[in-house]
Every structure is written in structure tokens, then in C-alpha cells.
Length: 185
Ligand SMILES: [Zn+2]
Ligand SMILES: [Zn+2]
Image 1 (tube, helix red, strand yellow):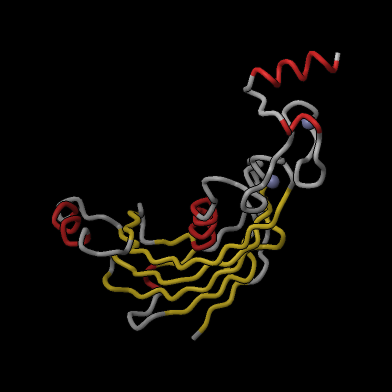
Image 2: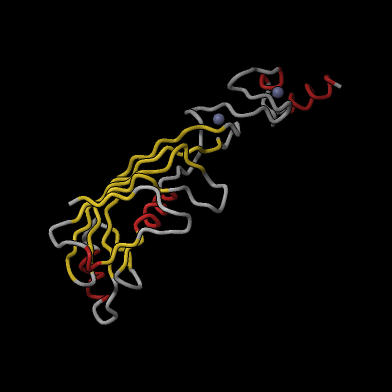
């Protein structure tokens, strides 16, 4: 049985209750995960897609094994040009409604596991939100349009990937840069 989720209305989130999930695994396909509405951190070339299998281990515990694919549009840290950043990552999580009395014991048990534990307030998974959060986790630490992007000349503002300028021949920090700047005037 495969559950497919296609475009849904604004503000609607995709809720899956633990009680709907099979203990032998239920498969979900999300064909359109919209980009976050707030913040200009990144945008998506097309809505992100995800597939996952949810397996109910107990009334309070579900294992998620999935895959998230997207094409992000990021702005290069060095040259400020927009570029495409493909995302294709495995997502493996344990979703659990923690039982206060057993939580500590279970933590020790889980620490041997590679799966991340996500504590939930109620036995409901907001699937699209969950995958949207993983888009943020997929963001690169350094955003570069290409390896070795040359950036923008701090003196004249030229995109050094496209053009070369005279000021680049002397490092800005060197005393010669100061001289070169004086000569221009
Ligand atoms: Zn760049
Ligand atoms: Zn320059």
C-alpha cells in the first residue's frame, strides 16, 4: 500500500497518526513539499520530493526510513550569484512520544544506534514539516557556486569568474595595493 500526497492547500500539513501506520511498514510518497514561506535562506527550483517507509514499532514509537530530493537555489557566498544545489539524502529517524519514566533507559539503548531520535508531543507525524526541516539540514556550510569560485573584486566589484581586473594582480592587504590605489588617483 502506497500513500501518495500531491499538492495540498496552503497552510495544510501532512499529518500521519501512529495508529494509521502498519507494523510491517507503510510507504508514503510526497510529490510536492513546498519551500518554507518565511525567510530568504534558500528557495527551491521545484517543490522537493520525498519517499519514506514508516514502521510502527509500538504505540509510542515509529521508525522512518526515507529519501529526500530537491534542487535548491542558493546564493554564492563569494560572488553572490544564484546557483543550483541538488539535494539527495537518506533520512533515518526514530519518532517517539517519550515516556518520562523510561526515557533515560531508552536513551542509553539508542545511543548505540545510528538513527536520530525525534521526540514528539503526540503520536502524530507532520511529514512535510519533518522533511522541510531536513532541507535546512542539507544546506552546505559554505555556499559556493563552484569549487574555487574567485568571488568579486573588493576594489572594483567585478565578478572575477567572468572578468579579470587590474586590481587583482596585487593582493589587497599588501602595501603595494595601497600604492596601486594611489597611482590610480
Ligand atoms: Zn561564486
Ligand atoms: Zn578589481
